Every structure is written in structure tokens, then in C-alpha cells.
Amino acid sequence: MARLRRKACIALFLFTLFIFGTMMGLRTLKPTDGFSDLAPGLELMPFGEQAEKRSASSDVISQPLGTANVAEQTKVYYDLHVFYYMWYGNPKFDNNYIHWDHVMVPHWDPKISASYPKGRHSPPEDIGSSFYPELGPYSSKDPEVLEEHMRQLRTAAIGVLVLSWYPPGTADENGEAVENLVPLVLDAAHRYDIKVAFHIQPYKGRDDRTLHENIKYIIDNFGSHSAFYRYKTSTGKNLPFFYIYDSYLTPPESWANLLTVTGSHSIRNTPYDAVFIGLLVEEGHKHDILTAGYDGIYTYFASNGFSFGSSHQNWKTIKSFCDTNNLMFVPSVGPGYIDTSIRPWNNHNTRNRVNGKYYETALQAALTVRPEIVSITSFNEWHEGTQIEKAVPKKTATRLYLDYLPHQSDLYLVLTRKWAEHFNKEKEQWLM
Image (tube, rainbow, N blue to C red):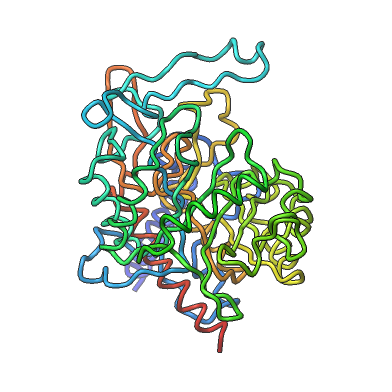
């Protein structure tokens, strides 16, 4: 009997030692992404750890991940929007690389700027991104790339592609005009039951009058396309849906000329009426957006803590303001953030992906405020490392790119689909 007790004590001691060693190992475990920690105050909480606040199953995201099952890709959700960029080019389709060769933006303080590299990236081995796309440095004009993007969006259950848009003949300072690609995007989206909304970018001279012309142009040219996204309002109208990036650059009094019923050239109750969503960066922007006549607010940035709007902890306050003032709140979630390939001095805004946990936390924060629509930053903004598009490991003589290991290249597509299904189950509960 004493011998048995001695054996039991030894076994118990060894088991305790094993548990202790395991816990110490977990405490020292580092994420494989290789860059900075989560933003201060970011609460790393997978779905399921707030089960007392919700009624649906809590194991939607935090389970083993594999390649998405094609048989399950039969549905997309139109309350899930993703920001999409068609500004990429390569020699095969565009005679040269576009955007993949992005310049390294100097810091505004010359003394700080002097400490960081300058010049342009040199594709295909050296691109303006900390990750490397599975498709390589592709061209947005490549029909095979466009088709593959739609397949990935379908895999992720995303129903609305929000297209970054500049007026015909204009582009961002690092790109070229791509207005001729819009019909191709619409046609490709239609083949996958995906809708297309427009994300109107700032350009020289943009104001309430030029935006009025932009809206007329977009609706006249693309409004009848079957893939053109229209949102059904509470009054039963099916209206186009526009995100206005950097809307705060124009005074709210000017926007009110266009967006309020009494404005000098009001678009309201005309054939060009639409749902307009303004960007909130600073807290005061919510009052400006209301004065301007916008229909809602979005936050865009994927770096938690970067701005008032992008900070998850503020979303409850923003949502409350929106509810009080009959505005829509569209929080923007992202898988992480790293733009040091083009802004090498901006490491303090980097947000570690933590193998998908950062994304889960953002999704949970969005779900908590019960939004009608959630936007994702982004599908393919590779410069800022916010992409959910497939990425692969890549090492060159001069660079080691980040990747999604130990998961597969479709990690963020699978996470998005699982969360989309969970989000819609939750919405059914809210409406009961």
C-alpha cells in the first residue's frame, strides 16, 4: 500500500511538473509575424469568451482552420463589405510595374526622414509590401487575376466589393487612371453574385459640386448593371451606396449643399439620391458628418488606437451617437496593419496579426455594437498590410516577407466566412 501511495505521489508530481512546464512555454510563446505587439489596450478575446453577452454558438472562429470547402461557398452576405483596389500593374499588362514599385514616403520632419531609406521598390523581388501575394505582383487588368479575386471573395462570403474610385482621367499620385476597368470588375462580380459599391477617393478640386458630378457619372454609367449595389432603406427605397474617403477635408457646410434636403443643389429625392457614408477619424468628425447631411459613418483604418474612429473601445460611443441621430454606423475591421515598406518611419502604428487573433478581436468588437453593415479593410491594400487576399512565404537575397504561417494562404478568407455566418446568426437573434 505504501508503495502504491509513493507511486501515486510520483505520478502526481510529474503531472504537476508537466502542467507547469506547459504553462511557462505558453507564456513565452511569440507570434510568428515578427513585428510589434498588439495596440495598447487591445483585448485579445476570441469569440466565445463573451458568451454571456450573446446567445449564438461561440466556437465559430476559434477552431482548426483548413482550406475553405467549395461546397459551402454557396452564399454571400451583402451586409459584409470589403475595400478593394484596382491600381496594380506589371510589365505584361501595363508595360511597367505600377504600385508594386511604390516610393518610400519621406517623413515630414527632414531630421527624422534622414534616418530612413529613400527611393522606390524594385519588383518583382522587392515590392512595396511587407507580405507577398500568392498571385505575385499582379496587374489589376489581368482577367485571370480578377477572376481569382472574385473566387476568393466568394470563399470569404463577402457580398459587396467597395471599389476605390477616382474620376475618369485621374488617379492617385503613385498610379494611373483605371476607369476602363470598372465595367470588367462589375461583370466579374456579377458572375459570383457579388455587388459593387464605390469608395470615392479625394482628388484635387473635390468638393460638393464635383462630387455631385461624380455621382451622376457613376449612376448614369453603371447604375443599371446587375452587380451595382443598392441598399434598401427603412422607407423601402433601393439606393446606391457611396463611401466618401477623407470626407472631413471639405467643410460640412459645403457638403450640406449637396446632402441635405434644403441644400442649394440637393441630391435628395432626385434620381441621383443615395446613401452616403462619411469617414470619422477624430471624435469631432461625428458632428461634422451629421451637419453635412451624411447618412452614416465608417472608420476605415485597421490600426486599433491609431485614431479615435479606428479604436475599438470607442465604437460603442460612436454607435450610440449614430442611433440617437438616425445615422448608420459601419465599423471597419482589419486583420492587422504594417505600412513600413512604404512609410519606414511608421512602425509605431504596426499591429501584429497574431495568427488571426487581431482580426478576431476586431470582428468581436464590431459584433458587440450590433451594426447593420461591417466593412473590412481590406481585400488587397498590400502597402498597408491590411489585405485578406492570399499571401505566401517569400525570401529573397535582400528581403524576408511576412506570411500567414502556420496557417494556409486562405486563413483570412476562412476566418471571414466563419465570422460572416456567425454575424448573420447574431442579427437574426437581434431582430427577434
